[in-house]
Length: 171
Image (cartoon, rainbow, N blue to C red; front, side, top):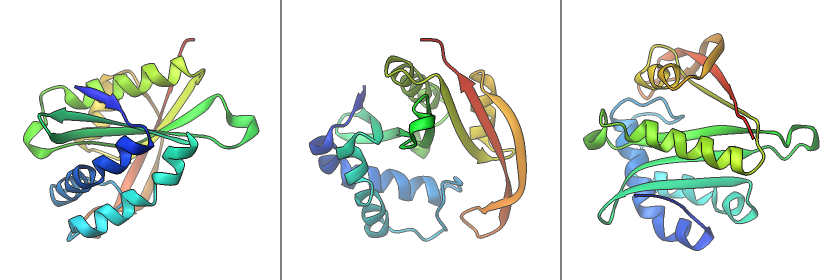
């Protein structure tokens, strides 16, 4: 089951989102954190997103298996008047126990459909070049428009190239 979180639901899901983030980093996902991220630090990071969720600037979905959060994806809407037509897909993560079963694609599709329903016609994202995430986006019909060398460090601290993607949506 995939559900969009309101502010109260987001607060209730903070512990599960934190466990998922720590799991993703431990497994080597390049999501902006270094190895050794503990659940407490992951919770603190997610908590900094609460105001954006409350304001509607960040939409967060979770996938559950029972009471456990096994996946998430977010849309960050632009606050610039000239960019109301676009949003960024951020923090698409699937627990290591659930990878390879299509959940990442379902989460991505959920975000794409919600973006289109809200009037967004352009989605953008970046990911580590050569990663499983990059292959997911390519298979899902996203278009790579560039690679920036050594843009971000992976969890081990090694700088990696990042690929940038976009997808246009029909209203």
